[in-house]
Amino acid sequence: MPTYNVSRSFAWQGTISDKAAAVMRMFGLTVERLGETAVTHKCRLEVKAGDIVYITGPSGAGKSVLLKELEKATPAADRVNLAQIRLPRDKSLVDCIDGDFLQSLRLLSTAGLNDVNCILNQPANLSEGQKYRFRLAAALAAGRKFVFADEFCSGLDRVTASVISYNIYKFAKRSGTTFVLASSHGDILADLTPDVLVVKELAGPTQVIYKHPTKRPEGQL
Image 1 (tube, rainbow, N blue to C red):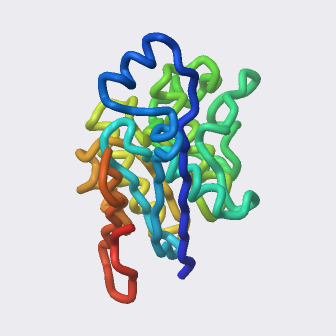
Image 2 (image 1 turned 180 degrees about the horizontal axis):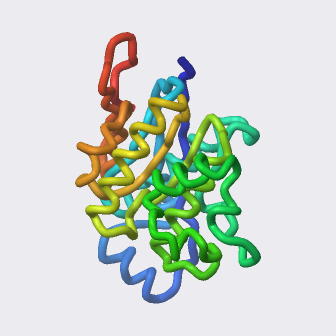
């Protein structure tokens, strides 16, 4: 069961304009104090094959930072990120998904793409929500050990997001694929049922909660 320790710090960088200097005076700050200030995002967690890791918290808390650092900690050949999947213009959805006819349809259905007009369309011509679901289907078809997705289902209507979340849960358990997902939405937790829930607040330590905590580490860093 691999253990991942990730940490990323952001030191203050900027220029002192007249307005910035006025703000500093208002709060009693000096350039030296600003230089000593760094925002650090860190997390330690154990993940096994088929786990769903869900990073959640308010906007600006550092969810995307943790996801990117976890992605860097996995071999490039073993991972796929939805954001990196291109949208072909020269073939239909069903022809873009690797596998035989029925397997391609199953993967598209898992990603919430069931409409025949959509399946026969080109990915580049889809709506934004459909494009996201196509990328998800393509990620499932890639057969990698890890799937990374920031803003998971954030742009979808919440019923569709719940259905896809449950489908991803079933796919992860059936295939052994590990999903590392990030979103501020908490309404999909019951359907996604993550094995590892990472709660990133605006301040304070990152909390890691395991669905089955036996032999897992304590959950704060």
